[in-house]
Length: 81
Length: 547
Image (cartoon, rainbow over all chains, first blue to last red; front, side):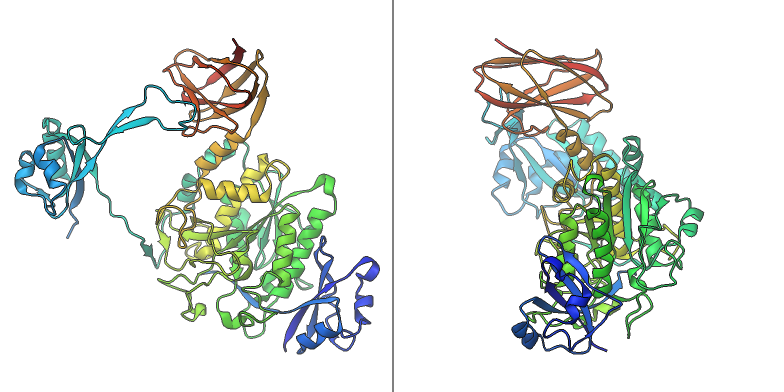
């Protein structure tokens, strides 16, 4: 299944998964609650959520200014020989 | 058949040699005295004129670091000719012959140089060889052993019992560790890639405290059991960020090892796509890497195994710009791989990097017999933790408050032993990590203030050790060094910047530990003074006096 990372700018008391789940544009997505809301930049107030299924990035960013990016959840592997 | 031994012979001036430098071939008659059985002169090699070098009698204030003058006149110059001898016996005969030959000034080796790489099937050297190359005895003797430093192994999990069975006894903090799924016990995970990385960190930092971040056990669909997803890496890094931001006053020293990454562009959205990872600083993982480094962590990434000579099969033949995403981030140290003989491994990925072009940063040793997890601790997977161990060892004595992560990366790059092309190149970065250079630079960084008229004391505990002082001067001054008898300390002075052994404005270099420098007229400003042991050890006093 396709998984996507969504970067959000959340200010003040907005930094809860409960708040994110009712945000316009996000509330209809299949948010991975076990993954949760992850802080990635304290200085820029940026957080990440992980969602299952495809996301129309252009549409989401046009309707929701808190969304700062829709990114690939890339596969990674060890550099063993 | 055994290769012949190539030599360079330095000849004194003769009119024929001078003429030969302008010819395209070297006539046999030009070097008649070098006729010897077993030696053949390369007549296709035009002799190279070497100007005569003489020590400068006086080095002026504005002539920083220029110790010699050069005379290019034909009569003063010497000339290099090239040849080869059959074997060691012939080389010895040649050495004896030229000792008696007034036309010859010297004999030198002419080693083969090329941008070569190897693709060995078995290990090259052992972890003991790596210890020797990294001068771990010197490091540990100075308290640089990883003590008080957390090292996060972001990998497949580590097995502490196995490490102990291999003679490695680092600390371990399960409470600060992390796994991507319940039921996984940090420190007790199957012996695999992560345990190899942990072993290799302990080569230079045996007293570090390991943290187990078993990211690559998240098991990506369609991949091997050792694959993972970047979303889990984001989560792992958020836990590390918590460690550094929880208590600003007692911030731990944290070094993060990452021997993993992407192997092929098909694993990612295409370049130019807003969600792309490889080329996009705004990908959440690249953002959190920057945040973690900004919070004070030293982050090291392996360059990858998609080198052009023998790439990993997972690269699917793509060896152009294979240092993807965070592995090429400007906030990390990107580590390529060389054997213990300082020859690049052909699988080691080459730059330019996707995010920052000037990658890899440097090389560290890999492909040696080490942990026993595999037949060789190989890939840039092993090179990275070897370098991580050095960073952790340095951090034992130098916290982030003393040297920031970017400053430490610069020190590591600047002091690397240059191999491959001169200066930075995309195969080797700035060269092989060099502990001696790092230690010299760290010594120079400890600058103590001294006033005119004040006597400062210190101790140099080994040859090559230095002590740095800063003096604010308002008039002409004399600087005097008083050291023990029978040894040789030197003073280096530079106005406005710290001197090195090659960059300075004034230098006192008698053959003893007593030195005196007179600077007249001295300009108002800050003078940096380095006391360096040329030979021997002992206490000294330093005094600056205005006339």
